[in-house]
Image (cartoon, rainbow, N blue to C red):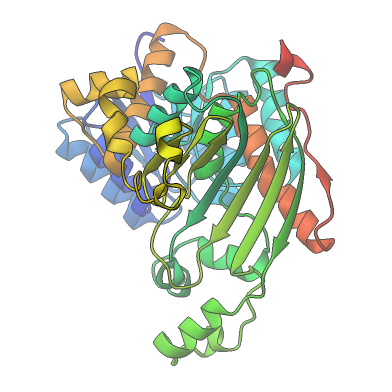
Length: 397
């Protein structure tokens, strides 16, 4: 693609941040902006003008953006429930799509993404920024060099106190409130699963076979609303479907297991709990620690943990991923510690070079399907669910 002309759909908090601090600073042309709320769409247009570009077309209906002849690339940062619908419309119109993260509502949605991509050949990228995290890429580099030996198990989680965001969802027009009222599932799996999938070569010599999910009771939001929003008669009398803690266990074709944890409605600190366990060592994100199975570390077994807590930085000179070595030299930019900048840089580069997308439609389908499958598993008391092979056998080639 010689010239990228972006139709930008979704201008809530996340959408505005990406537009202002990543997409526009990378010099990309935005020719249309859209949000279901006109004030947000107008704000998006102001950001484009502020960046020195001509005022873009402003819409509240995404179909107008996709039908615009002056748009050839769609960035989707809207509410979760509209992601797949918009991506399908974009691909069917022959317009490259970059879709923000979130889980699928049905497994069929995932198959629809794959079928539409294969039929149209339209470029599609899943915008999972955590795949570009500095530590995630360093650990991936170490795994690929065999430092941790044969990988056996990985943990990950979305552990983020979102009670305020959810409870005030009507006031701040945030889609999470509706989801937490109506669904009980692992609703946001890809921040942790994306980097783990890279470590385990999912869709590239390995795949996820089955999962089972269990959810705790839903008490956190009820308590929070009672203490912080007592005048809200509507929410005071609502019952939330979403369990406070959801635990999902996944089995892979090559024998590894994965545990995912959703933990967003109880008091806690932020963590993605990225953990990699191998026959020669481990990494633990909670303490940012690397432990290697060396003879000297066994001399005092009780001090084994104490000797390595918080030591991952010591390995950076040797194992920093090449992407981040370059990035640090050039200067870290954008949000989320630089991850957002790198993912969009990769998307735009792939578009211009007509190259495969680094996080493709098969990744999106596999990772997003965990939400729909976990919902069914929880509803059936933790039943084992089969995870489809969205590559139709190409994963082992």
